[in-house]
Amino acid sequence: METFFDYLLEFFFMIAGLMFAYSSYRSLKDQTNNKNIGTAIFWGILGILFIFGRWLPAMISGILVVGLGVITLFNQFGGSEEYQEDTKKAEEGARKIGNMIFAPVILMAVSAIVISWLIPESSASVIGIGALLSLILALIIFKPSTNEVLDESNRMVQQVGTTSILPQLLAALGIIFVEAGVGDLVAGLIGTVFPAGSALMGSLAYVLGMMLFTMIMGNAFAAFTVITAGIGVPFVFVIGGDPVIAGALAMTAGYCGTLMTPMAGNFNVLPVALLEMKEEYGVIKAQLPIALGMAVVHVLLMYFWAF
Image (tube, rainbow, N blue to C red; front, side, top):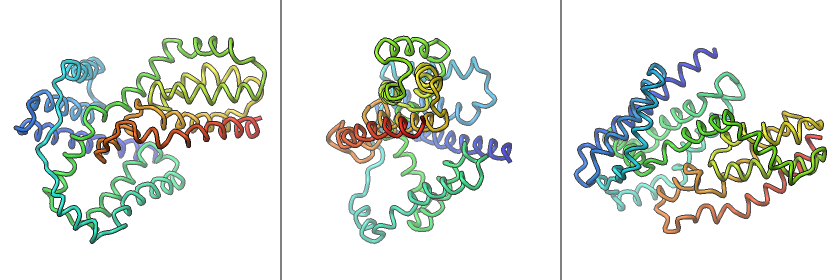
């Protein structure tokens, strides 16, 4: 069963790669973008990595990733204005469909939770399964043409832009930090501020460490390996904290940091682009009070539940 879901995950990577390849093709033909060549190469490289990444030699993959960086470094990636939304048609569709527009999103979330609960081996590919189910439902509800599906998919990819690779880069950065010994450095710094042996101070250090490091890295998964090695083990687990409870709370505490940083591009930058918000940090400002309140709750829960 686990092998099946590994192959299924690879299938979803390939589907994403094909979408990037299509965006590369559209970018190449796009005359509204004066950086269409660089943009097309960027999406083309990303498509190759997603489709063939499993079989590419590490050196080749590394060179391609560097190529992505070179394109953005020399500002050769540009946004497309090829697709202009039909506002009148969108408003008519919104009135006709109403709240059913949220059904595909709800289905994706609910199906992901249910499937991962029923089949634990599916955890790595469950988001892809949920997305596929929600796509099928969206096709049934909205009945779009093939061109509309391709146009809207390409528009979304172009709007997200280079932010689309931020989660992968941050996850890789977390591994690099651990290998470089950043966890030990963090432990040394925390030890000068928080006394060892205190359950309350250990909980506070673990939660704040996860929150702040996630704000820096933009990804709680990347921060978790570093902060757990540097703070969780010596300040919480060693003095009797339950690793399962404390680790789970530390991970969700990291999401408090996610709510407060522009580095979390898929959470806080992407909505600004998709919703065309005028205030660049409007999402973060709205989430800030909730994030701070939840951080306090996490400290208390870790102190009372993990010890």
